[in-house]
Image (cartoon, rainbow, N blue to C red; front, side):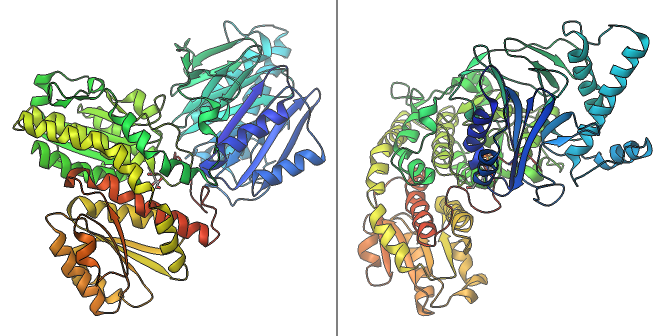
Length: 633
Ligand code: F6R
C-alpha cells in the first residue's frame, strides 16, 4: 500500500528519500515520486512504475536540497499514471503534498474549490484536492496577515508562516471525511515539514540534527531507531532539531519516544534470494519466539500477561470471537478449532470486513481478538474499534508492536516474529497459530484441562521448532515437485479439521505468488461439486496427516484418483506407506497432535507456492496488485 518518507536535516535529501522508498517497496505500489525544496524551487520527479524508474529519473537530473517528501502510490482514485503519482501541488505550485488513505468527500471539496475559481487541477486524485485546499487556506492566511500588517500567528510556539501552514493543515483536515497520513513541504518555509495522520500510519523518526517522517518505521530504521508513533488526529511540525505535536483540533499533543524493536540488519535479505524464502526458513525461530517465556511447565499452562485479564475474568469468558483478514483469518479458523477443543468455549471466526459492518449478536462475556501481522489493516482496525465501541473486551494478536491495533486494543499478545517483508504472509501465520493454541491452553486450564493434559500441550508446542527444522529440510524435494507441475493451470487443496484452514491458506499462497487458479476446501466437500473440476492437468493437494480423519481423507484421495486427477499428499507417520500406491507425490513430515499440526503442514505448502512461483519467473516478494499492509477498506 502507499508509502511516505520525509526528511529534513543537513544531508542531501534525495538519496535518503529514495533509499526509504526502496525499503517500502515490498508493501506494493504502482508509481512513485519525490519533491525536494532547493531555495526557490521545488524539484519534483515522479513516474508510474517501479522505484528503479524513479531512480533513473533522479540520476538523470539529481534534485538537490536538504528537505523533502517522497511517496509510493497504490492507485485508488485515478489510474497509475505519471500525472496521478504523488507529490501533488497546490494552485500556487509552492506546496507539495503526499498522502496515504482515501479522502471520501474529495469531490465536494473540489466542487467548492472550483466554485471559488481554482480550476488548476492536473490529476484525478483526491490528494491534489487536499493540496489545493491547504494551499488556499495558507495563502489566504498569509495575505490577511500582510494586509493587517500584523505578525500575528496561529500557533503558540511556531512563528509566522510555519504556524500559519500548520493551522491551514488543521483547518483543511477538519473538513476531510476519510483517512489520511500526509507529509508536506512549502517552498517559502525552509527546512520545515508538516505531517498528520488519521487512519493511516505515520511515524516521526528523531535523529541528530535531522528528523524523518515515514508511514512505516522500516523506511528510516537505518538512520534512527528513536521514533514517535503518531496517533490519529496528530499534526506534527518537523524541523531539523525540533518537532511540535498538536492535534487537528489545535491542542498540544502528548507523545512518547520509543526505541524501534528491530535494526536495519533485521530487514535485510541476507543470502536468501527472496524475503519470502528467508521468512519461511525463520519459522523455527519465530515460533520459538512466539512461545518464549509464555509456557509454564510448573503450572502446566500458558502465561499471557499481556491479555491484562485476571484469572477470574479469564474464567468468565463465555464466548470468543476471532477476527482478521486473509492469512490472519485462516489462522483464526485454526484458533476456533483449538479454543473449542482445548477450552470448550464457543468460538466464532468473523471476516473483519464483515464483522465491522454487521450487527453480530454478542453476549456480555464475549472476548474478541483482532489478529493482524501489520496491526494496520483497515478492516481489522475497523472491527477492533467497533467491538470496543460496543464495550467488549477486545485484544490484539499483532506482530508490529507500535501498530495502531496494538495500541488501541485492551491488551493482547505480540508475535515477536520479526519484520515480515515478503508480501505473502508466512512466519506470521505459524506464530498466530502457536499463540492461539497457547490461548486455548490457558483458557482450557482455567476450566477442565488437567495438569497432565496441560503438560502434553506444552510439550507439543515446545517440540515444534526442531520439527519445523526437519520440515524445512524437505525444501529440495518440494522444489522438484514444483518443477514437475510447473505447466499446470492451477491446483486444488483439501484438508479436514485443523487442516481445512491450511488448505485455504495454501490456496491463497498459491494464488498470490504464482497467479495460478487455486481453491481450498474441506476434503469432504469434493463430492458436493468440486469433483467436477478434477482432471489430469489439475493436481489436488491433500493435507492428510496420520490422524483421526486420515482414512476419511484417503477415501477422498481415491475419488480423485478414480477420475485421473494427480495427487500430491502432505502426510505423517504411517501415512506415507498407506498412500504409496495412490498419491503421485508424497511429502512426509513429523507426526504431531492435531492442534499443532497446521504449523507443520503449512510449511511444505508455503514452499510449494514459493518454488512454483520462482519456476514461473514471478516477482515473489512483490506479487502483482498486492500490498503488504492493506490500509484501505
Ligand atoms: C496473505 C496476506 C494477506 C494478509 C491480510 C491481513 O499472504 O499477506 O492476506 O494476511 O492482508 O494482513 P494483516 O495480518 O497485516 O492484518
